[in-house]
Amino acid sequence: MTTRRTEQTHPLAAGLDALAPEAAAARLYEAQVQSLAAIRPALVALEQVAVAAAEALRGGHRLIYAGAGSAGLMALADCLELSGTFGLPVARTPILFAGGTEALIHLQGLVEDDPQAAGADLARVAPKAGDLLICVSASGSTPYTLAVAQGARGGGARVAALANNANAPLFAEADIAVLLDTGPEMLAGSTRMAAATAQKVALNVISTRAAMLLGHVHAGRMVNVQADNAKLHARAAGIVTDLAGCTPAAAAAALGAAGGAVKPAILIAAGAKPKQAEDLLAASRGQLGPALAALKT
Image: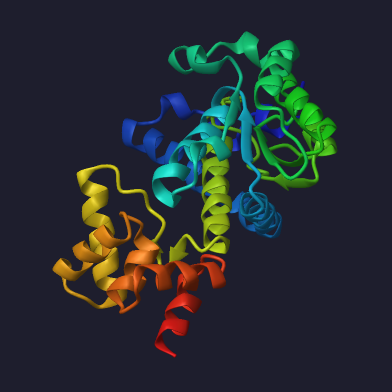
């Protein structure tokens, strides 16, 4: 018997495989929805992680993710979106994933237990003072993730830990501990389900709040989006049009004058000269609201 709640049997799992198809699907769905309740008690800690992430990135340091298995996949999904959504440089948001790219094609359990692989990955990324490392592990005891956390702290980096079991060993290595107490899984131990669902939402909260603190979100818009395809070019033009209150033609011209950067383009479309737009954003530490207010005074 295990004391880890994620390994225990869910009360609603009894008779699951004997239910009618629609009833079985509904029970699986409800268990996933219920797992999200674990996020509310963790909101204070999630905000602390977001603040630490914004401080690291604002200071020219890195936001590093780490994980193995399904928890690592949740970390990877959040990490890969940061560049396109918020314009964060890829070099500033690396990830340590047990097994590397080969494990993305076929997840291998053994790599989760390999602290030597963690050491090699740590040497490649070399977390140091000023960096923030976010470690994700449902059990909170994955050897790879534990070794990464220990090594990062040894290098001077701050560590945030997300785990789904109380008293997880990973929390002892963390400056900020985030417990997502999702409880037993509908398939005992299958943490790709409730645990991973809560992990992904928690990571969404962290990264989006960090982006807000950095000024990359304004009025519910991605104002630091990197437009590298037709859809995002159209989105950028729409953002400038809406927030500057200008015509689509004026938005396109402003984006051209700003080299495709949305925040300065909004200021240009609102009446600023390109250099003035840069100065306003520098004075407001990248926050568009204060920059627009200063332009209007």
